Length: 120
Image 1 (cartoon, rainbow, N blue to C red):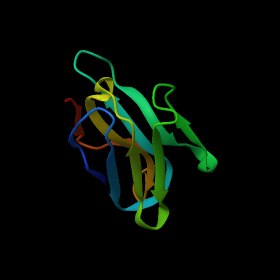
Image 2 (image 1 turned 120 degrees about the vertical axis):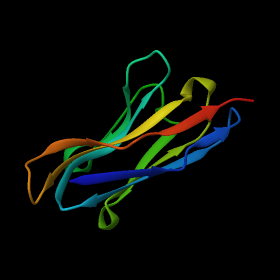
Image 3 (image 1 turned 90 degrees about the horizontal axis):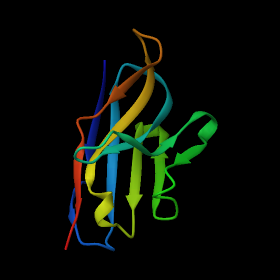
């Protein structure tokens, strides 16, 4: 089993910054992809930013130039630096990882989510 533990959410004013962290733990053999999704009330979960194969990144168009995803492979940790936050960024942010373990082939795992609220 794989656990994804998120941290760093909270309340911030428009124009402010937050940094999210997500650490993966368990009997991990390899992480094929890892990143962040979000879900606002009444809306579907959507991609924010992820690392995909080969170290490439994929960003939602709404966050390009404002959010930066980074990672520490030695710690199986991914970060999301969010700058110039807008009220429309308010959502629950979920960490996602596509992981192979000692006991299973590649499968998807999700964190519990961390609330980000952008409001004055």
